[in-house]
Amino acid sequence: MSETSKKKKGKEALEFFIINTELYPNSSNVFDSYGECLLLIGKEKEGLAAYKRSLELDPKNMNADKILKKYNYN
Image (tube, rainbow, N blue to C red; front, side, top):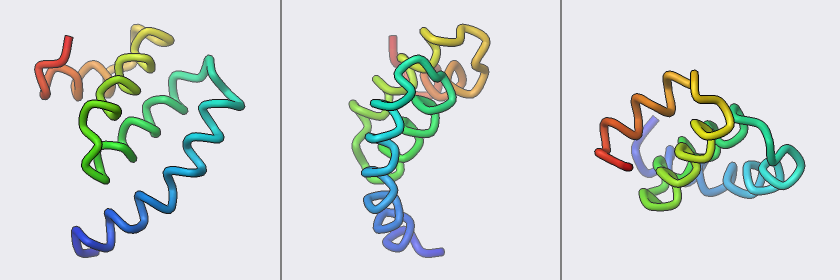
């Protein structure tokens, strides 16, 4: 899949993830996926904030921790 196709799919999925965060505000997995989607479409600041929220909800979330360290996000 091309980078352009990935971004288009990501933008389409964003609506789903926004609704998911509203329905499940205490789900680390939801915020992890939301962060991934945001990074995919180039919304780095928002994506990293979602990963941070994911890690706050589940401090053992290794994926969120890895992504935040990769971007040097505190």
